[in-house]
Image (cartoon, rainbow, N blue to C red; front, top):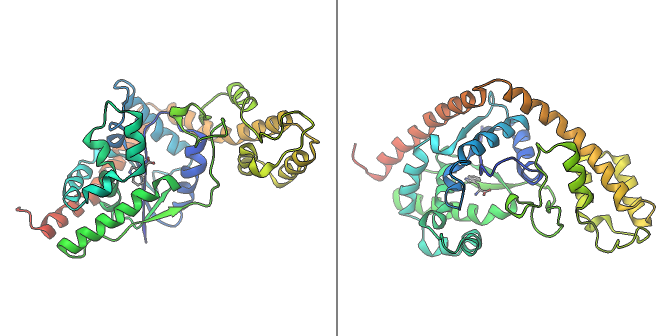
Length: 325
Ligand code: TRP
């Protein structure tokens, strides 16, 4: 059975972009693959973060993963920094990672621009740790969004260099891109992202969800109620495709094109269906939160299982590259 690995940053509550773009697919992959899902707190600390919020956000993200349907009985769910082997392998991989390639990573450049007073070496070698995450479990498939493709290409390059220098050992991992259309934020401009404040969190209450949708950007051609629009360019139509049935979608599409319905009606139909969908996730989250210590227990058990595999890999790698002991 092939192995799948993916990671998510503990950015706080999961939002619709995380869910639709990644986590929903992870849930489906559990049926076919041996899966590892990791909350990557070591990656998070390369960016500016709030010290007092990190561990709470890590638990929240793990809780949301499970509430969304990641099943700890079938998948290994754990926190990156609980398994020291990630950083151990990272160092070894550092020695076969081309310096120049790291400097060419778009995310490194973007993040460096965003935090010009904190361009640290961790930010630079972020993709090396990401590679270690994946290949520690010899994962061959990595479900990620399009923004991670460059990191995955570098991961493959690092593996090739490792195998060339020390002899074949690691399989080359491959990005598994979902067919999910790009989910823009509510501003209709940029990717949904917590730091841009253009998201809907999965845990948000009904009223705030309705309010946020009400002000969300739609097809800019629809300035007045009677202006017809094009659902294909409207981010809210994209959201409808996830949460509304065929009949509703048809109503949205034709109503928008003919201006039979206004954006307001379209948005309130979306809000109804979205809220109904989120209800299931909310109930599962509430159930988990009603059991004190349950999520911690799941993560400890996940770390134990992950460590078993990771330790084996490190022991083999140490021997493979000629380290003493
Ligand atoms: N860099 C990824 C992101 O920001 C998170 C991540 C860390 C990851 N390690 C990973 C994703 C390993 C896939 C595999 O989305």
